Image 1 (cartoon, one colour):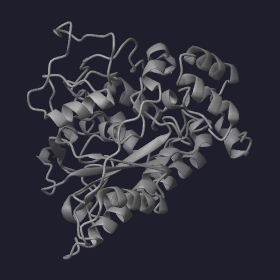
Image 2 (tube, helix red, strand yellow; image 1 turned 30 degrees about the vertical axis):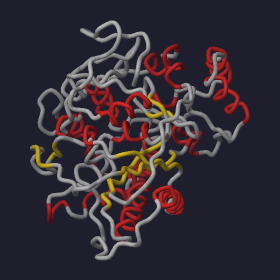
Image 3 (spheres, one colour; image 1 turned 90 degrees about the horizontal axis):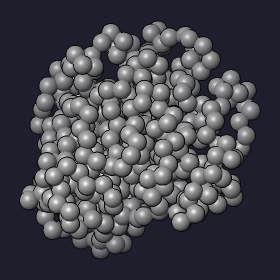
Amino acid sequence: MTTENHKPRGWPANKPPADPGITAEQAASDAAAGFIVTADFERFSQRNDAFCRSWWDDAVKSDHARGFFDSYRMEASPRKGEGFTQKDFALRNAAWAVSDAYSTRNTESRGLREGFLDPLEPTMPVAPEKIEPPDPPRMAAEIKRIARLFGADLVGITAYDPRWVYEFRADAKTMEEKPNDLPDGLTSVIVLACAMDYSLVQTYPSALAGSAVGLGYSREAGLAAQLSQYICNLGYQAVGSLNDTALVIPYAIKAGLGEYGRNQMVITKEFGPRVRFSKIFTDLPLSHDAPKVIGVRKTCDICTRCADACPPKALPFGAPDDTVHNRSSIKGVVKWTADCEKCFGYWIRLKSDCAICLRVCPYNRDYKKLSSKLIRFLLGTSLRRLGLWFSDKIGHAGRVRPKDWWQGLIQK
């Protein structure tokens, strides 16, 4: 999210403007994470994300947008060629089953859409008695172990920062803004990552590839529900969250799980951009992780493979800046920013999600292979151009035909 050479409009030559509302601790944390937050910063209202806007904003709303959401019901899923057959949609929609069970369980009775517009509801309330005051470093280590036990592939912990919490939630039935209430006294955010299946990702764009996303959401719904309930059982507040409540990318970066890339994703050392994130807000005393630099920013400075491959040309070229394309862009943050209207418009045409930008990323690799580890090493050094050349030479980014996936011909 930071930039060494770019100076957004109106910046003095020596330093960017500081937001007078941030604390010294937040400023230090921003610097460590490579964030530049300007005086124009505004907290984001979830009603303005592209998915929510498709239900109320004429700039995005259309019958075609309805068709995208309807395709997650088999009676409405289209049949339009390889990768979009009944079998492909059947697998994709089945992969979402656990996530769907959580998200819809309180929709009719209470108007909630858990994990997307509202946090996950705990099964049992917070225990009336707290455990003995824990040692924060030891408790952080225990929480990470429990998170992995419940299925997390990566875990990081960072400080609670209200700037990344949505200013308002969106009402599941009306899409009007509603309060984004969280318990008082929250101090930490536990960020959880679940890796997406590499072989499925290689079939983007297709409904088949969307199975990797559904599996990720279903895994993280159970994971966030279990870990937040465990913390509640210890006598502390814990709010399990998927897409709802807050922007997860800033927390994931500050929790040391990866760096921000041109493709709008957090690039992790272990899986590249091929992860789904969830989060838990808590007042449990925990030590915090530090951001980690693995060379992504410098690689993305010279790599435009995701932007080149984007069918609707929604991804940016050039250096990060404070561009605001439309109301789905956050204001006052210097970063690479996609045009979400163009991006979601392409999803609507596909009737499924598109992650070509993920598939072609040079960090999207099978890191069990020695060649992939070598490329990752080179991308983290001054030899990153050689790493990009080697990545292209191996040819990992080519699309795998969905029929080959079904026939089991994916090379391991």
